[in-house]
Length: 164
Image 1 (cartoon, one colour):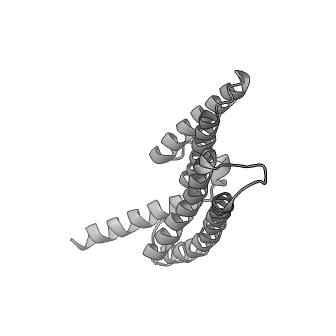
Image 2: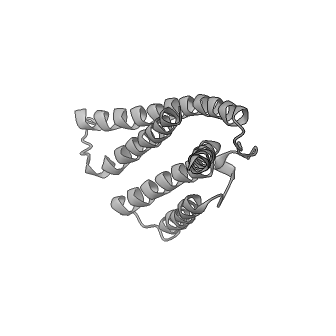
Image 3: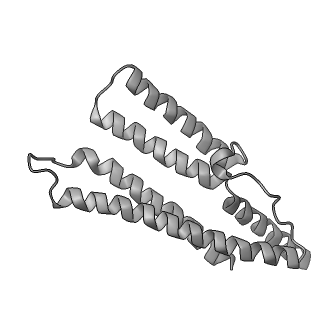
C-alpha cells in the first residue's frame, strides 16, 4: 500500500516537473509570423499533459493517504495530526525548509528582474522555472501526503525494530 502511495506521490511530482521542463524549452522555440510550428504545439501539449498528470496523481495520492490513515489507526500507529494545506504551511521539515528557502529566493529574483527591467528571455525563464519548481516542492513537502509517507515509514521502522 505504501509503495503505491509513494509511487503516486512521486508520479505527481514528476508530472509537475514535466510541465516545468516544457517551460524551460520555451526560449528555444522559433515563433514565426504565422505563429508556432509543430514543436511549439508539442511543448504546449507537454506542459498541459504534465499539469494534468500531476493533478491526477495527486488526487490518487490523496485517496491512498486515506487508506493509509485507516491502517495506521487500526494497527496502533500514529497518524499525523490534522495540518493546514501545504500551500499555506512553511518549514514543516528539513526538506521543506530547503524548498521554502529556494522558493523565497526565487520570488526575490523574479521581482528583481522586473524592478530592474531585465528582459533577457533566458533569465526570466530561468527565474520562472525555479519559482515554479520550488513552489511545487514547497506544496508537496509541506503537505499532508509527505507527512503520511514519513509517519508510515516511522511506523514500519518501529515495527521492524520491535521484531528484532
